[in-house]
Length: 464
Image: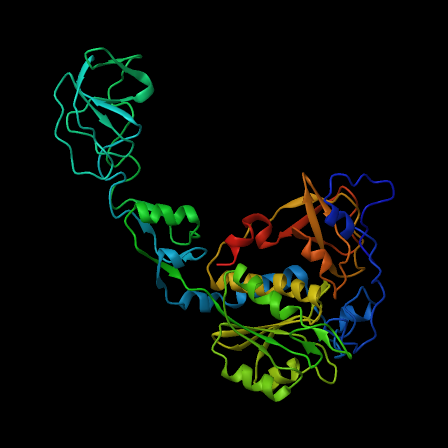
C-alpha cells in the first residue's frame, strides 16, 4: 500500500516547490521476494508493504514473532538503564558541554549580579534633584567609584558599578541639563529605580538548575555568569558504525551492480544529533569473520550495523550474535519500513542495534531502537509525545505500524511520498515521521509524530 499525497484538485500553493514535487505518487508498493537484498543494501525479506507471513516470521524461523513497535521502543529505552546509572560523570569545558546533561546541580558560585549595577545608561544620582554632575563618568568594568553626596550625580553606563549612597539611576532620556550644567529630571524619580541590586537573580549557593537539565546555549550563558569554567556532565554514549554489504561504493556513481552507500554518510551525523559520540565508521562488506572480530574488539557503548539482519546467505548478523553469545532483546519489529531491525546485548556494558540496509528502513530502526537507548545512556529526558491531524489519509499496513515522512504545515502534517524502504527523497524533505497504526489514518485524524532533530533545532545546533 502507499500513502496518498495531494488529492486530485487539492490546492498545493502553500507548499514549497520541492515539497510539492515530493508529494507525488509512490510506485513502490510491490513486496520483494524473500531473500531479495533490496535496492539499497542488506535488507532482506521484503520490507515493502508485504504479506501477512512477514508479520509472524521475518526470517523464516518457525514460531518467531516480531515485537510491536511501541513495545520495542520501550524495551530499547529500558535496556541500558543499569549501565546508565553506573556511568561516571565527566568534567567538560563550557565550549564542549552543549547538548550534554548535567550530572550535578548547577549551583551559583557567586551572587548575581555580584555587585549593585546600573540597568541603564544615564546618571547615578543621590538625593532629590537638581544635581551637580561630576566631570568623570562611571564605566562598566572599572573599580568601585567614590560615593555620591546628596545633590550630586555622575554619568553611568549600563552594567557599571553603582557608587555608594546612590539613590537611583536616571535614564538618559529622562534628564536634561541647564545652562549651568545642572541635571534636572523630566519625570518623577523613584528610590532604587534602574538599579540591579547585588543578588537580585540569585545568591551564592542557590541551585540554578537540577541534575538532569540539558545544557542549552542559555544554560552555558547562565553557567558562565554564575562563575563556572567547567561542568559535571553525563558523557556522550560512544557509538561505532559498521556498514555491511559487498555491493557498496563509497564514492562515484553506481555501476556494474554496485550502488552508493547512503548510510555511511547519513548515520554518523544523525547519531551525533541524538547525543552520541561517533567513533569508528567501518565498511566490512559481507565478511562474517570481519564482523565477528569487530564485535569482539569494539569498546563502544553501542554498535550500529547496517544490513545483514535477515536470513539470506550473506546476512551474517544473527549467526555472529549467536557465535558470541549475545542476548537478543528485540528480534524484528512490527513496523514498516524496517521490520527486520534488532537490538542485542553483547555484554553487560555494550549493545548492538542492527539496522536494515535499505535507507528509510534504517531510519525507522534508528528512531525505533537506537534513539531510546542513546537517550537513556545520555540521561536525556524523553520528548513529550504530540499529535497533529494529517491533511491527507495515510494508508496503513494490515498488521504493522507504519512510519511515513511528513512536512508540518500550520496545525496539520502533510504525508510525503517516496516513502518506500529504499527511498530517501521523502525523509530528506521531511520535518517528522508520522506513526500510522495498522489499518491507516484518515484525513483529519490525529497521528503521533516523531520530530527529526534538525527540524526544530536547526542544522547547526543539533550536531554537537
